[in-house]
Length: 93
Image 1: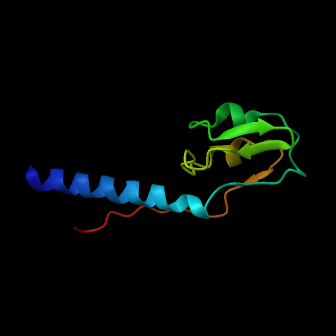
Image 2 (image 1 turned 180 degrees about the vertical axis):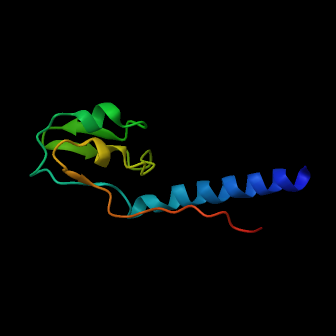
């Protein structure tokens, strides 16, 4: 039982570490030329990282973005691209 608890804790720490270090470079890319400002990405973002600004949607809270790719999937114009695939692997302690 104790070994499984340690594995769970270690896995959680690894995920947290990766999530807190990826925001410098890995964020969805928004093409404002394709965007029609429908606001669907703003309404559907599970972490409220996206807001509609004068020029269009902007990721105003990058630290909140979990790169879930929901915005890319629901954008009717294909104006949002998530260019990286994140693969989580459990690392040995």
